[in-house]
Image (cartoon, rainbow over all chains, first blue to last red; front, side):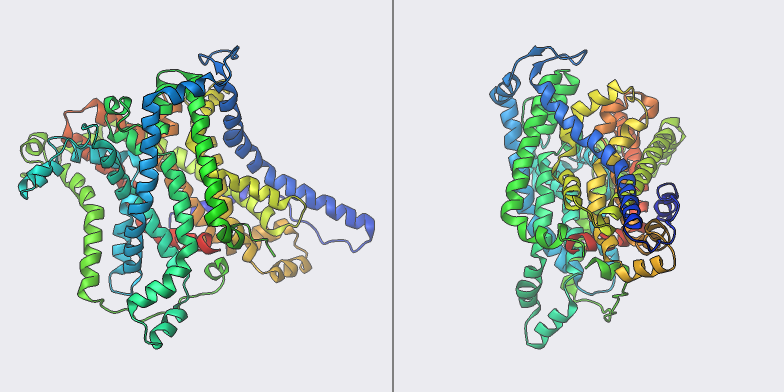
Amino acid sequence: MTSTNPTLDLAGGASAPPAGPRPARRSSARAAQTRRKWYEIIGLSTPAVIVYVMFVLVPMGFAFYYSLFRWRGVGPPTDYVGFDNYVLAFQDPIFIDALRNNAIIVFGSLLIQGPIALGVALLLNRNFRGRALFRLLAFVPYVLAEVTVGIMWKLLLSDAGTVNAMLESVGLGSLVQAWLADLDVVIWTMLAVLTWKYVGFAIILLLAGLSNVPQELNEAAAIDGASWWQIQRHVTLPLLGPTIRIWMFLSMIGSLQVFDVIWVTSVPAVRSLGASATMATYMVDNGFFARLWSYGNAVAVILFAISFVAAVLFQRFLLRRDIEGAITRRAN
Amino acid sequence: MAANAVLSPTAKRRPVSWGNPLTYALALAVAAVSIAPVVYVIIGGFRTTPQIVADPAGLPDPWVWDNYARVLTQSDFWRQVFNSAVVSLGTTIGVVVLGVCAAFVLARYTFRGREVLYTFFTLGLLFPAGAAILPLYLMLRDLNLINSYYAVILPQVAFALPLTIVILRPFLTAIPRELEDAAAIDGTGRLGFLWRILLPLSRPALVTVGILAFVTSWNAFLLPLLVLGDASLHTLPLGVQNFSSQYTSDTAGILAFTSLAMLPALIFFTFAEKQIVGGLQGAVKG
């Protein structure tokens, strides 16, 4: 299997000599042991901490720093402008459009993917022949690269593309749209493509959660005369609560930073008019391709701040119980 | 609980039966929606562009292999596959090695500040990794790493660490303390315990985080788009995007290229699906 690689490669990471038998001596031996423990703790965790700090935390700090200047990206920034870049962003109607589009994608994804994923997961959790194959097929969109998905739908949804041709041929010609060019339609097209792409992730998580629901509970309910629907509603669903909330959380964070599918599927001209822009595409368009570095960094900080506040609120009000139980439970 | 997945064979086999017709009808509908567009793209690659223009929804008539042959014989495709493989393998190795070491400390050592360290890593789950992409680019530029594999690998390792640690820690914690004590009595230190006992026992979790890191890296677009300007370093997603914008009128060619780009991920996932779902089980409620 392909999967043996990661295990084998661990050799490099853990080749330190094993500790010898511990001398049963008093305080000096104990101190040596404590010291050795700390060496191990520091030695093992430092590489991860360094990489994580350097490539995740430090850039975020720099983003804030750069955003306070007017700066072309070369040499040290000197032209301090305070929060002007932030003011500019909120005065740009295109950025406001991007915010609105992100909101549509966040709530649209939750409201549409949630029920669909729940239904499909319950369906694929039933015991029937061929279940494994159907599961595999349902996950296909999620596995594909965002870029290939984007290009695929771009071709299918073009004006003379397959979707319109099929609508014509089944007599639904009135539904034919400029899916990717109509400024009022394009964001909903994007939402549909994103739903197709990511609903599989919700299904995977929910199936994993479902397999944790003890079979005995369902059997007990069945013996008591509960129907399949009643079991799902009153036994399975409540037990699935934590999984659903974790999915909602991950979906929300993902929707706030969505970039790839939008970037590839929608035409740059449509994006630059704001019709399909998101905060992330707006940031890359302006910050990277238009070389407005400090402005782009201000947008990055806004994107980060919104995600962070949303995440903290979500944790505070919805995830707290799950986190206490699952993620931050003390070891031993 | 995560422990189940590692230690006890939970497989209590229920009899598998043919479900009712409604189950199958719904399952078929789900499958159709999921793969119809993909099948369309693959089959479309066997048509010519004039065929596609004349009837976008038709079948190949006649079937042509030329599009696929063209993509496979042009050197760009294979070079991009190679670049993607290097970047993804590098990322996977980095994530698993660093992740295991950190998760081991967080799972099997008791020390002051342990939960602070863990929270510090989990904060990364709140970070939209993409948000810091501009300053990241500037930093990599100042480090002279732009247009190198490292410019993609190092940040991707960092992005993947939080999830890796969140998944691995409960697995490593769930291994019974008695095993560690037994190892200590036999004269094995904690590192020996990690290497000889913990790692073999947590193989399913390692494979899961490895697969997740590999697939994420294989599919990544934004970071390579910014830091790999040099076309000879382009990964597959960049290649697909470039091909489609370079040869806009060659619809059949784009379909063939896109199909071939999908193939590795599809094959890989077919083999790894059980591992991913099994591994997430621990993360979801572990």
